[in-house]
Length: 366
Ligand code: NAD
Ligand code: UFG
Image (tube, rainbow, N blue to C red):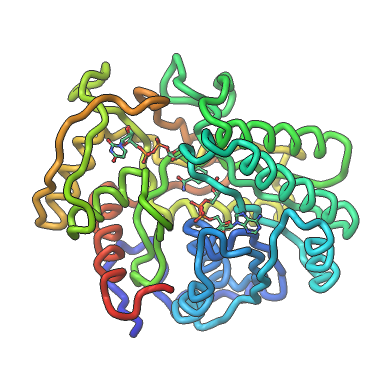
């Protein structure tokens, strides 16, 4: 059953907002069954784009394709491939010779696992990108949007961070792959005729208002949001708050949390900039956040308010490798992409909670 739940007006209502503006424009979305990718595919299809998803399902489910179809009324093409296989990547470009844009989400993203298995992360995240870039060159596909992360800034000296803030040494092999991928794209755009946009995401949370797609962590989650919703629903006994002795107003660490639907819409905005030939440089970089920082305790209190659930949490030691505080200066993205995050924290919490509850329903993802 498609249950469309209340949401603020900026978000699209399934089946209602369809535009033919971008009809017949084909976009390859790697990692399109994943958390951010699936929400982006929904937004793209609702704008009229034709989507081809390429994903090896290492951290997602085939059923997400059906759920995207339920939300949008249209089934994206799906190719089950490992992007580290150069030959298979080439075959996708040959099969869909009319691909005009690529949004490259596919990557492994578990920070802790990357410390334990660095080669797995370097192999997967870097080889997948190289294969995409080589096929883009061979098939003359010009436009790439790449998923980067605010992790490239480390702990900034000055807040909020702008796109010109210094890049700091990576705290994990995962973070390092993002830095290396940014450099590979920078070097490649410098000597070729294609355009790239690096979107540096801050902390995506929440889920689609339909509660049909959302974050589905395989194994024990590490991120705050799924830890909160899983402890609220009873999947985990308690929530740990990592440190309350930071130099912040309530002592807990601060991040810039952004609704995943807002984040997804920034990708559409990046494609619209390519299509309108508004990009002024071959490589453009944008911070994708809200511009607001919230502490862990503020997030917990917002969740408790919107869910009516009291969270069982306790303060424990700081988590190794965590930074104290970061939030984005988003003025460049607001101005140039003509995009701005709309949802507030309460709405992010409400959608994350609806999603967690939907996951407990009988027709859960497999
Ligand atoms: P996700 O794990 O939900 O989605 C990634 C998708 O890529 C998965 O469906 C996975 O199966 C697929 N994939 C991985 N390696 C692949 C390969 N070799 N071939 C084919 N498919 C492969 O992650 P997400 O949260 O949606 O993140 C999307 C992107 O955004 C990633 O590049 C991630 O590093 C980046 N990012 C995420 C966050 C976050 O907090 N979620 C923050 C900053 C940046
Ligand atoms: N936290 C807790 N308890 C938990 C989980 C997290 O207190 O159970 C705290 C963390 O210590 C941190 C904050 O909540 O202060 C946010 O932690 P997350 O793990 O949700 O997010 P991070 O900012 O540490 O990192 C995330 C992704 C990275 C990505 C980065 C920026 O995990 O991959 O956002 O996009 F690079």
